[in-house]
Image (tube, rainbow, N blue to C red):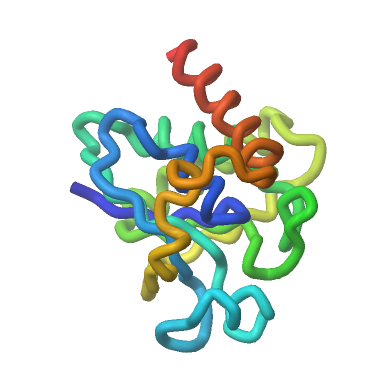
Length: 173
């Protein structure tokens, strides 16, 4: 099993995208990349901690390649907007990948370079790529948010289109 921490804006969205993907062992919504230990959601959202909303993804690399993880990650958020995803604005909504191995670092670097060389996005990719330091799980009400609140307006208007992109990608695989 391997772990990688992904920040693609709101962690509710990123968690929902990876839910049900074959090879994913567990997903925990939380915070990484900040300056204080055990931050609360309220503190992170106020921009006082430096953390990004993210997911800690545990996966079986024999069933799910890092390349497929990166495909899903980059296809379901905008890696070219600094500190924002759509109407969600703030450093805690930044695009970031916190790698746990040197192989992951290499793969992520090569993947981003290929996206840029192929001009996949009209603007430069601003996704932060950094070594994993610490992960702090979010409060329980933030775990499995889409599964528990599928009819909330945010889920319908923000998360559902990302799930549609995920399904389109997976059906072509």
